[in-house]
Amino acid sequence: MRKLISLLLLAAALPAWADRIAIIGTGDVAAALGPEFAAQGHTVVYGSRDPDRESVQELVARTGDDATATTQSNAVVDADIVVLAVPGMLVDAITHSLGDLSGKIIIDPTNPIVRHGDTLVHGVATSNAELIQAAAPEARVVKAFNTLNWRTMVDPERSGGPVSIPLAGDSAEAKARVAELIVGMGLDPIDLGPLENARWIEGMLIVWINNRISGRESFDFYLRRSER
Ligand SMILES: NC(=O)c1ccc[n+]([C@@H]2O[C@H](COP(=O)([O-])OP(=O)(O)OC[C@H]3O[C@@H](n4cnc5c(N)ncnc54)[C@H](OP(=O)(O)O)[C@@H]3O)[C@@H](O)[C@H]2O)c1
Image (cartoon, rainbow, N blue to C red; front, side, top):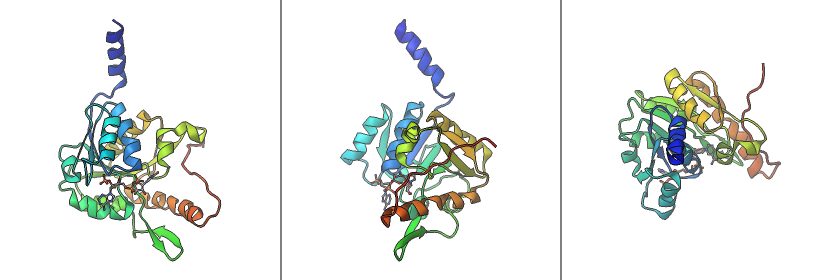
């Protein structure tokens, strides 16, 4: 009887539908988001250049029973949602290499940075989110998760209060789906409007990383909703 009650409680906590979520990359952001999405009842498939690598298989095992890993282009084939958790300056090339992304929601957590003399600067003229949308015009791109450290993504309490995730995108439906994933992680989505606003939040990392590499004071950053 207790087992039946547990199963019913679990079913009540899961979303009305389960998405297949392809996470491209197996670094810190992939390892933060994958287990969180799996815990919400979604099926996670990691796309890796080396899916048999021990570290990738450990991540698969940590993610949950029906998680898998395959190549990057295989991972997206049946996916409803694709997360591009890859190095920021490779996003355009990787998106082009993935094949047809039409109809899918693409979550873009990336920050494009390049070295310019002694400092790092934003590495693209517009934003990675807009480059992805241009590379996959029939997909619905949502910028999310790029304004905070992966540790705060999985443990927002460590920041001492609620943490907001700004979303930029041109599809209200896609932003609503991503917002559900965010709420399921104990985070607070904030709609930032159209995709072109992604360029402003991609810039936030620049000041943080330059202070760090130059040996000046270190700090963490994220957004927090305020009362008007
Ligand atoms: N780290 C953070 O706290 C954080 C927070 C917010 C946003 N971000 C942004 O999120 C993105 C991912 O960051 P990350 O720290 O998780 O990892 P990362 O070091 O940028 O690498 C992510 C993964 O991309 C794959 N990859 C690496 N080189 C590649 C290549 N040449 N071609 C194809 N795939 C390649 C690798 O997976 P495989 O080896 O399995 O192929 C790697 O694990 C970055 O753009 C970063 O700016 C990071």
